[in-house]
Image (tube, rainbow, N blue to C red; front, side, top):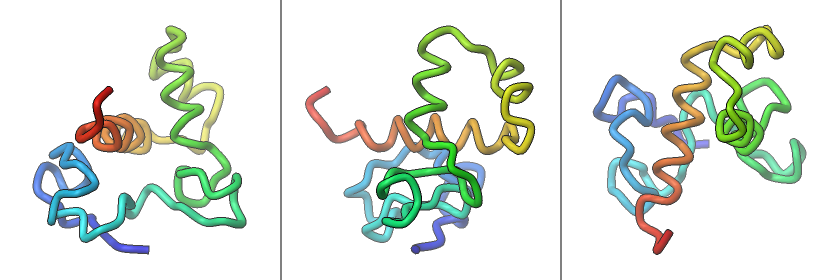
Length: 97
């Protein structure tokens, strides 16, 4: 896993650079996002959990608030949520979406 905690923009993915940006080092990971074939079928998850980035983004898209998610998943932090959102933004930054 590539550590991108020193990326520009608050130390994580907040710069929302796309996966092809040199700052990514070729991998879309941070110290908070983990991609492991043994965890959730290789989907990006919050480090040390089985919470996928997809789940967080879907819940937010459905209208859940940050407070809702933090209440439902006590081990989730506000920083984890921001990183998941930034990861989602970066993953579509260079697509035709």
